[in-house]
Image (cartoon, rainbow, N blue to C red; front, side, top):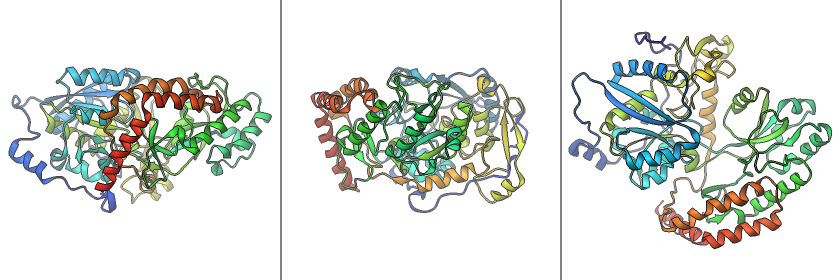
Amino acid sequence: MLKQGNSSQSVKTGKRTGRKSKTNGRNSRLILGLGSLVCFLLAGCGTETSEVEGEPVELTWYQVGDSQKDDQMVQDAVNEYIQEKIGVKLNIVKVGWADYSQKMQVVINTDDTWDMCFTSSWTNDYLQNVQKGAYLELDSLLQNQGKQMYEEIDGRFWEAAKVGGKIYGVPSEKEIGNCPMWVFTKEYVDKYEIPYEDIHTLEDLEPWLELISKQEPDVVPMYLTKDYTAPTYMDKIQDPVGIEYEDDELIVKNIFDTETMKSSLKTMRRYYLAGYINKDAAVASDDRTVKRFVTKGDGQPYAELTWSKDLGYEVVVSQIMDVKITNASARGAITAINKNSKHPGKAMELLNLINTDEYLRNLLNYGIEGVHWDKVEADAGEAEAVQDSAYAYEFKIKLNDDFAKDYSVPYWVQGGLFHTYVLENEPLDKWIVFKEFNDRSIEAPSFGFDFDLEPVSSQVAAFRNILDEYGRSLYTGSVDPDKYLPELNKKLEAAGIQDVIDEMQRQVDAWKAAQ
């Protein structure tokens, strides 16, 4: 990595210098429409407005995340590099987590001066923004300025980025599937020789929750917060409506009418009454000082290393279910280009560089070498074991002591993960394992289906308040499901949930017939 202000140093400092392209199955390169290419060549699609000769093109990029002390320092280093490489000057605008969706709706509806933005299935909703025409269709740009990136990224991410057969965003290549995990405090696992790797279902936890409750009175056996949801074996396409993971018939259901969810809620109530769950679970925010035996997290390979670092003590994990790929999971992090951007080609050129250039990707991700991080030597045996892989390095990096308060960014917001360095507490094969994890992940039967909620938008709008009123208390076992689940369903019925189920089923049937 370059020192601050020095853009002449060699970019490729690691042993890994490239990525292996994917050439089989759905990982094959997707064929882009001839019509889009003709449009690009003949009608000027994706062309740039004129610029003063020699002046860099300025791009504005909205990102979710809190501002950092050294943001400008890093942005200056980024601009020094990208101006020389592609003639671009970048202005990154960060918006806090709680405000991002609302802020972006204002930006999208009133301001044409931005060029790129972070979008996803969970904030600044990708599908809804595409459906209302906020983002540029990218197929022709990907065939040209984004070609290298397009060929490298797993084809299933591009499939998920399609809406109506067209691509409207560049996905950050990371874990592709939904992977809920039980997260165990290792101290108690070791002390009581608990076979955590064999614990998967909610019911599998019971004997160990009972053990901890009896033997460790100062420990919460199952620590939950208001954000907890019981394991959901369903693609919730429009919460609480969706399709169960194993249902190849694609029958649309209300999740609270499924036998799996009914059983889970009863189990949670039993655990709550037994004292296994903290009494304030339905309203609690995470308090890391609370001693706990197990909680739930949404994970990926080596997630326990990150969680251990954040918690300040060691944890181990087990998967709750097989990893399933849905549109929501594969759309977890995307960068879109404004349909009104004056520089769509340069925006795509920049995204291609970020997702293929090792130096730039790590500069954005970790900051400046020697200021925010330093290289450390990896174990020789570990390095030798991964030396032939395109997904590994021969060194690791150590974050400097002030990194967390000076320059700590959401690592998946700006681009894919597989070109980023691994930390000193992580294995060199981290990205090899991630790639294998993605390859093993299974597509849910509903993967690829997008719901147009416009015909039932008023009904869907009413669901949120109802789910907020009942969901947290039911999921955490804080109330009796025999009493409150019928109340919840009655309110959903009054709000028109059957209309939503019927409309989604109609669209699913049409989608299935077209496959």
